[in-house]
Image (cartoon, rainbow, N blue to C red; front, side, top):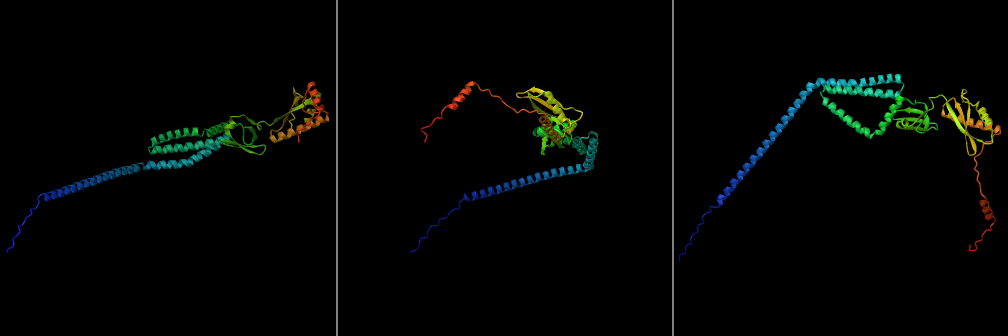
Length: 349
């Protein structure tokens, strides 16, 4: 038997897959070309901006160099003027300080004036240098800034400014000098140092007290050195039974030969008022020196001399006493309490 041949089946190629693949490839190539073009455009734009920036910077630097070359002579003159102003300011301050010290004999004022002269010379040199450099507007701005800063500092440090102004007024008025014996702000002593801010006083008991000038200027100042003499005064009580004229003569004679007393001033004993138990008298003696230690020593010697003279004359200084009047009812009650028997507490253990 002959075998039958099977019929062959032909498969026709598909026509839809090939166009889709070609479209995808074409779209990818277009996208790649577009991406490459935009990247090149960004790169070119960035390079152009960088070149423009470099050109502007170069132009600016060239302008600065040209301006520096043009202003170089003025810059050298400005630096030279400022450098010369520094020793010139010191010389002017030293000269003005010496002249004012000789004229006023007030070192604080002379020192302040010398400092002001030095600052003015430096400020003038700085202003001249800035004008040479054509920086006038800078000078105006600096002055405005200094004014505002000075106003703010004035409010912040008004206590220091007040002490400084008080020191300046005291230096001009000169109520005391270094070494004077003064009484200021409840302190008595000799002036050790004086500055524009405070004054140092060494008290009679050896303490060093620094007092702000504002407290000194706003309170009374007692200068014992301005006058060569000083009056010693103290109170004494005399009994009502004593002869006042005899007591007066005794006190005066006891102080006639006291050391340190001014001979051209008489000793005065003034009876002032009737007290509760005594007649109050005031003893006045003028001393030849205003020194505090001399004053206290003379006061002690005067008290000793007066007490010795009064004891020798038989005058007894009264002792303060008080009189108490007790009525009859008080005496009767006191007598009854003293005569009453003591009560016995039977509940006590």
